[in-house]
Length: 317
Image 1 (cartoon, rainbow, N blue to C red):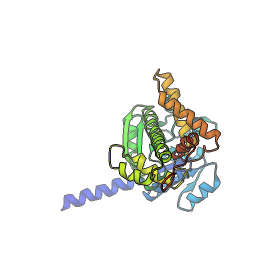
Image 2: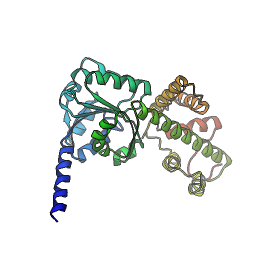
Image 3: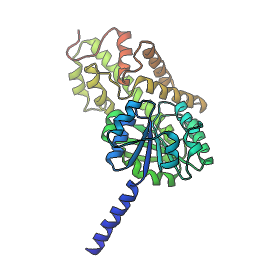
Image 4: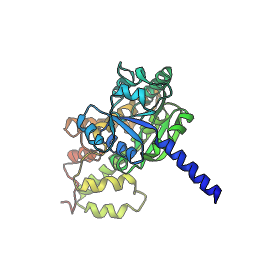
């Protein structure tokens, strides 16, 4: 009994130490907002920054503190960035009022944005010069899993830094894997984005074919979802497509940026990716058609347009 009580006491002390970590979160958009909320729920002290003052205010109302980037770098134990593109990440790190110039020694920076491996490796090398430990740790799961705290997180960086950051990751995600060294996390994310977006494109082709043939799409979906064609993508996107709901969980804009990074990386490695290159052209077509801020389930609209049909509930004629 004494040993059990001692172990429980140790666990409480360990938990208190972990939760005493001060976390800065930069980038409070579709993903960053719910991720910050989950860190607050987990008991962390969280400071926030975004160019959108309203986004900051909403989180301050829920217990976060407002701080600028320079003060975060001086005071936080961990800073998480969740930003749209590599240019934004680089600016946040290297500008005069950025993280590196003001970082205290031992600061851990976790970039959870989706950028290319070249950028991730270069930033990690620069961070080291300032005594900053850095991880590239993009996520998968979109807004729904950001909200419920079950994101999949693929991490690149040093094992020791990863271990020190594990409890922070567990505050926002479920499956957290150290893939390898710097750049490995974002490379895994690029592979993830190929699989996700080409799956959506394949589902879109199938739905448009069935719609043009005049069958009940909802019944077809129920018929095939338990077989080999069944997938997380099928279940996540088909009901939304049938409802014509393209409210973004992950925008076409963000996914177009990711597939652009895919193609740039593939070209650097001499890896031909014919289907991904076609997908990138589909994204550009959707952008030209004014649909770039739709959810990436809106890929179906490209196929609908060229087939002159629409996927919706009921029997098609």
